[in-house]
Image (cartoon, helix red, strand yellow):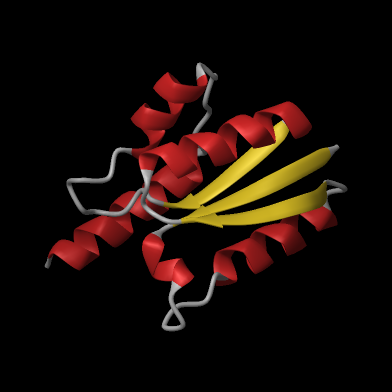
Length: 108
């Protein structure tokens, strides 16, 4: 199976942040026989984000997104993507739990 990784966040387009999540995800996917054929970094821009996901939907059966789901109230990536791409989205319960724990820690 082939996959693409889309890292979301304007901070990843600056020299101050590295996209280490994509490296980790690639290693894990390769370990279970999934070939990552493309990685994309997209800033917090709805049009560019929709374009990246629509393109990936035409190329591969599996898209993994990292970022854009942080604790800030303005981020609505999952809802926006589901509506703009008319795609079924599945969320990993482990990731969701880890994200919620991280968000709660950040609010303290």
